[in-house]
Length: 346
Image 1 (cartoon, rainbow, N blue to C red):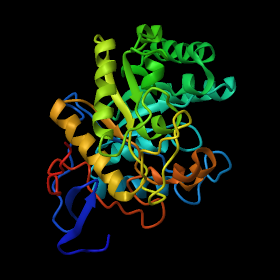
Image 2: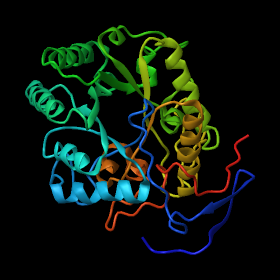
Image 3: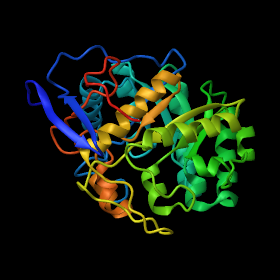
Image 4: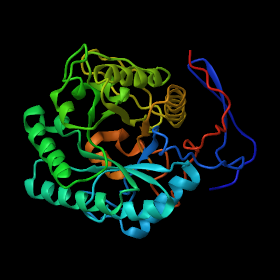
């Protein structure tokens, strides 16, 4: 990372003046290692950076996974990651994480292809047994209900959970979906019976997409997004009081600079993409989680250009670190000692 001196110039956002220290202007403290204390502070890790594509290839080699994990630890300060699959060489992330003392929430990616699901479950069981101290949580899929509906999703997820249980896997087995699906697509939030089958619940909360697709929460700005994350988190904690709940994805796009989505119901444009806004949303959400003793996963570690096919303009812009060499991170979010001046959110 290029060395800097001093402080980034003051930024004015919505009338709030912010002074931000450059991430590499001061010596970095030791990364937070709180994975044994019950509170997880993690970052979502997919190695499909520029030049790699999960659908068309090529797939990331071990050397790239090693390099990216080194960046996560040394620059972003995280010692916990969440991974998105175990096939196509992605399972090397567990060995790489073990070497570096990094803990893993491992998602066994599930969809509607039975043969691929079977291969994923089988490999996931093998890796959970091989890395019991590195893999600390397992998720039987992510957003399967969101993509395919509850009727299709439930048997797929339940089969996976049952297979892991029958195999005697010791790690807690859960499932990840949006907060809305875990509210059983109802408001006020209602219980989904799948909760009876899992050890823990992962919720993904993205006010950015609520601003585009929701008719319930139609207008959340970057300044308001951290409180939105915590509010939805608290809704699910109350609804599933007997389960461990983790905020498994939250974030904000850094680009295109100044870009905004239009709400399909109201026509409002309330979220603005920018690096400053991404910093505000991620840093303040982490601070609120820390003060509340709640577990969270920043989405995501690296920018992934291939996502433009799936999510349009903001698809490649969720990463907090660059997705092109030398894969630098501007802010050390995972370090306990904050290197920034206080942020004001009132």
